Image (cartoon, rainbow, N blue to C red):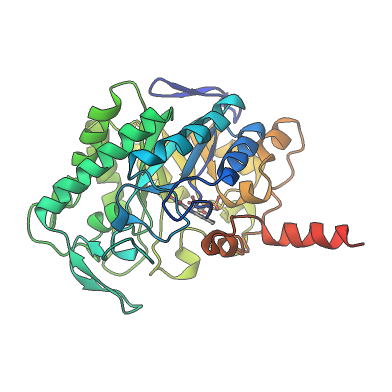
Amino acid sequence: MRTLFDQVFINSMSVPNRFVRSATYEGMGNPDGSCKDAVFELTAELARGETGLIISSHAYVEPRGRVRPPQLGVHRDEMVPGLTRMAEAAHINGARIVLQIAHAGCTAVEPDGEFVGPSAITLPDGHSCRELTNNEIRDLVQAFRRGAERAMEAGFDGVQIHSAHAYLLSQFLSPYFNRRNDEYGGSLVNRSRIHREVLNAVRDAVGDEIPVLIKMNSDDFIDGGFTRKEMVEVARILESEGIDAVELSGGTPLSPADRGFARPGIQPPEEEVYYVDAARLYKEAVSVPLILVGGIRTYSVAQNLIEEGIADLISLSRPLIREPFLVRRWREGDTSDATCIHCNLCFGPARSGEGIYCVPERQQRQKEGSR
Ligand SMILES: Cc1cc2nc3c(=O)[nH]c(=O)nc-3n(C[C@H](O)[C@H](O)[C@H](O)COP(=O)(O)O)c2cc1C
């Protein structure tokens, strides 16, 4: 029987159990994109908590791809020493670590430069972006390659290409954002061209044995957006191009809140997994390992997903902000639900640059301390 604590392989990377910390922007970057010490402490804590595989927060591959300043970057060689310490913090404490390489495209908030995207559009919040030229797309593919090379120099075990949540690569897949009529727009083969180019460039940089993962939307949940059916087709295309694992997420900043990637509030266990139907569709068509994220907070739910083969790894973000030691707690036999209630207040200190923490948990501790 498959269990949550099986050792698993993604390409040549052995992961000590099936738990993944999903990429989580922590607001612990310096203004130039390098890591503050707090990143190393956070990483070490997650590893000591027995999180098998840690996926870093999204690191921008070029300045225009930054969402906002306290974000980590992998856009310059000067980022490598900090990233090296981050990788070490995971390894010393027994975890694997993968760098999420990213570009925010037109949904950036405060890019270092202009807003660019697959097409010139104005978003509902009023900001506009410029369409990338084909030459710029070629440069961007190289920026992803250089990001992957730097991740290798820093000792990461692999990379994850960020193509979810309406950031740049997700925008290319989505007819809502991608209105091009050249070879990067129109058919799904064209909309996923940049993915094949990025994957091939990254593979070239890291070699055949290093895992290259992708996080992608299962559905944009917006009118005219990327759909579940298309997700399966793109996953099949990427399978044939040699992707090593797919993490399924969903939603964009334009989706209704209850269809966003981090939905507020908790559901009963039978409804807690956001993308379970998409995962089943994926499994019928694709044999690349599936990392499933979104809403999972109950031990028995996670175990069922693994036992029934609906997912191969279980990915958690908010539960591990509140309880970095959750995996260890579950392994030691206290399998009560994650205590995170998806209030989403953790976004506040991350976005402000204070550095992420669980707000209700800290308030509780402060209250107890002042008694
Ligand atoms: C504070 C915060 C920051 C996040 N940052 C990222 C990120 O950098 N990259 C990414 O792919 N997803 C990011 N996400 C989304 C999570 O990885 C995950 O997909 C989502 O929160 C659902 O999982 P959960 O229900 O376990 O929290 C973030 C989520 C939160 C709450």
